[in-house]
Image (cartoon, rainbow, N blue to C red; front, side, top):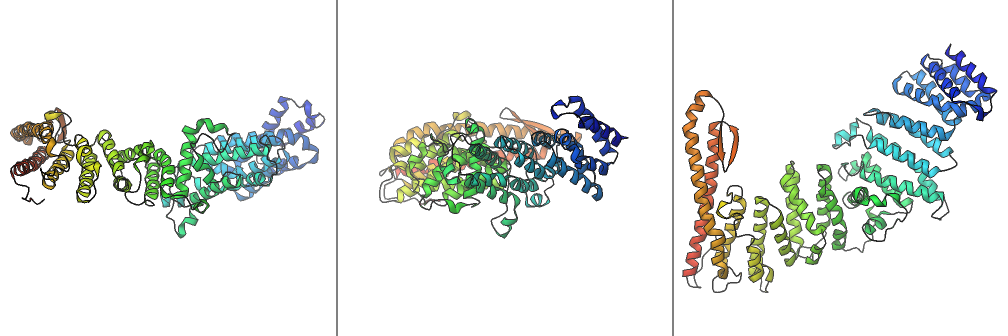
Length: 600
């Protein structure tokens, strides 16, 4: 019945001119064709499609059958039927109006979600390529539309992170990336083979669309993608192969990556006609950072870089990209920033990075980004690596650069542990300065005193939360103890002895008062906790204790006592170091210059 109905519609349309086809005819043809497919009349439908008399009708209306055929291919697993469906799809691609077919295929690609996205993309990429190659006009627009649609769908797929996930490729992203390269190659070759150079030519427009696609791919999936270690396995890494092909495309269409990444951010761009230039801050910065990582860390096409570039120049150019990585919250992304920073710093000798570089914004925001990773990242290995990179960065700076960075981080970190780390580095630099024969003004005398003003004080005086700031306070006391031992009052190389009165008023005396208040408070809480513990044990309930105006989360009484005793132990430790510092000050102010006191 469905076949007869379709033949009746075709017979009526055969006597009409192409321009006389009505919308009603298209609808009836689609319904009858759909019924033929549903009822399994595939061979009869193939005969109708291949009949030369129906050529005009199939050219105008046949594209309506593509959707039903594609759905059958997705759901039907019988090899014999699938062979007929593939034959029908090939015929429709060959015979139908390519413009209508292009839109129909793209609509089909946009429909699915989840794992079906990769299935339909892998099924339709070859037909889509064939259809676009048949187009005579506006090919660049069609290529751009297709690549944009494909990229939008692929960007919905989760990027595999582990080696196992890449190999299993559950959502088919890796397969799609490989197929997408094959889809794009003919259009890249078309750009290469074209001899026209006019900006207005179709070839330039096609180059534009390919360039947009390359940049989109650098952002997704390559910005978040993880790669195998650079070894024999690297050649089997599908995402690394995809990255290599994308970078190859850039060079092939006249935009080699050295030219692009070294000009990124300058007033004069290397591409003057890209529509997405206005979205640079949103998309292009991520893409360029991804490109820099692929080249410098993964070593893809790094042999194209000029060999004459200095390590400091490479670091300067990469710092903006590192900043982009560290601003992101995904571990897979900001970890690349840490790796890229390491790659740049390892090329530079210690103490050779000039302080003038810190006048460039990214040279201060990058270490601040490292601090955020160190303090907020839930992954211990990344926290430790960020700490190691911050220390490496400090090591590379010259004395004034170290001094400037220390001031910046002391003012911005707002984290006791980080401040303790910086104070320890200040102590190390003072030690180096005192041992050198030539004068280092940045960690002795007035400059050092200005820095110590940020170290030897309590942010809120005696009211400072000593427990929360214990790391910083202990580091400050150890630094002060070191200064008292190493610098004699007569020499006063550090300037400590002229500022001792201010240090006592701003740091030592408030610390004494704060310790007394804190110890009294915690001892009272311990007493209360012990008095209440008997009742709690009887009822086997949890208890709560308020410390410093904040309630400790409910926990067993014995655990709360441990917490409170631990706090008291911290105060005792601070108090013992404070007492030793004051003892050393008293001995030094009363002793003769010949007396020598050894550091413990």
